[in-house]
Length: 57
Image 1 (cartoon, rainbow, N blue to C red):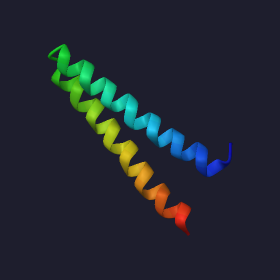
Image 2 (cartoon, rainbow, N blue to C red):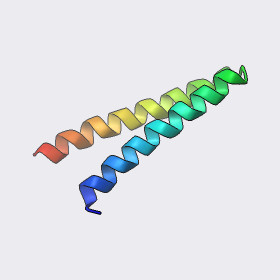
Image 3 (tube, helix red, strand yellow):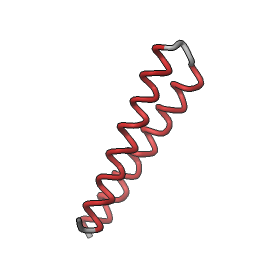
């Protein structure tokens, strides 16, 4: 795989793991765990956003 494609995969995996953690945290009524998962997913979205800008240059 090329480097830009690997970076996109990394961002998507970060978002997926964060959403999974948020879902499991909410199912177990663990607010801190769920919020940290949402934060991780948002970091993944930001990573994809900024890396996407770098890919277009």
